[in-house]
Image 1 (cartoon, one colour):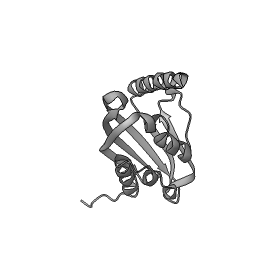
Image 2 (cartoon, rainbow, N blue to C red):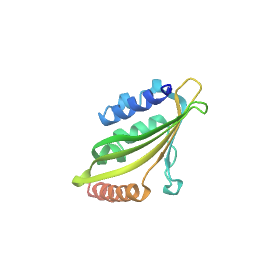
Image 3 (spheres, rainbow, N blue to C red):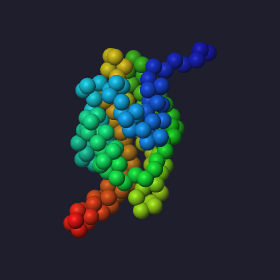
Image 4 (cartoon, helix red, strand yellow):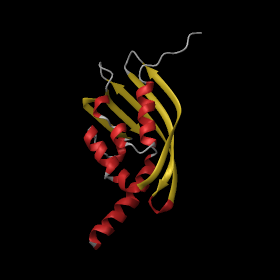
Length: 150
């Protein structure tokens, strides 16, 4: 049986390695992204709007993620690729430490769609919405309290 050839796996694994090393500039290097890139945080019931690469970068550096996640490490559990449709799907587990020394573990499924030049066009991130929303609510309340005190 011939070894399977992957077209997008290197891009995905380099991105996860950069994220794990907290190298956001490398993780979101514009060279790997289509100018029309859009990221969707799912499920839709969470109500988060789609993000451009720049908005996602800002969130990782200064927003909810940048201010609340002390450390994290994503481990790929499974990887699937559909070359004909220029897409890949990754199931990963993220473990880390959130503000207030709160440990967390969360599974993600991410679907990547690439353009004809092999640049990332769309990313759907499906998360544990109950856990994610609980972290977001806690952070939002703490941020509101901090803002009122200033």
